[in-house]
Image (cartoon, rainbow, N blue to C red; front, side):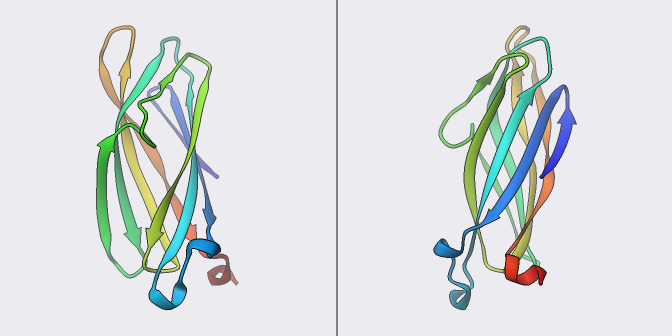
Length: 128
């Protein structure tokens, strides 16, 4: 697991290879990732937008932008956390993701960006 703190918000990420949804012969490698968002501030925050940079080990790269995460724009109260699981399909057995969330301080309505740490996705058979 990797973690990073930005603007009082801790983002932690861990990944899991999904062999049952992968097809290596066809160049399809599915990974799940679990993100934990912890609000260490004294004010509630709302996650409005996400931006991802996804890299395959073959040099390909894509950017993904969207509203919220997994269909919601969660509000995280001071001292609380929000966790979700999502997935990423790569064309190689290794890759990485990183990005940021645009969040809103619900007390003063100011927007700020929270970094998502770089996390690797590696099929277990590649590590041996």
